Length: 117
Image (cartoon, rainbow, N blue to C red; front, side):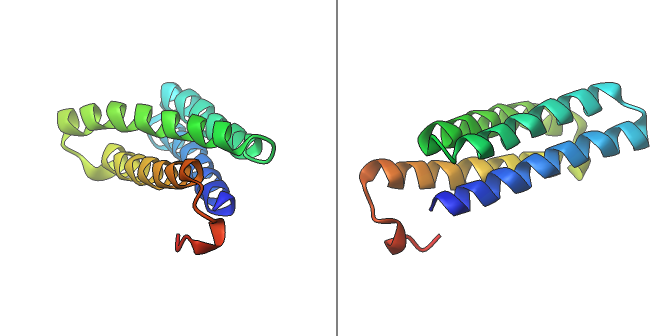
């Protein structure tokens, strides 16, 4: 269960870092680079934190993904473009859902080996 959360947080962090870099290269957008870099680092920090404090690391990941979901819902509705805002919206929503499910199962005391995630 923790391993799944760590995989999700790691992939999400790399996606966000990569998105910031691509935004800088393609659109010469320094705000994309800074925002993608910071958010990617927060996700990777949450991944690192899951090693010593899994519930806190997952909670930080949930908060980050919900924040980005809100931001990119607005941006996607405003621009009506799938790339890049729609893709970040979809990824953030998936990350939020997966992490909420994992955290709720951990809180309920379900044995990790009985969870089919």
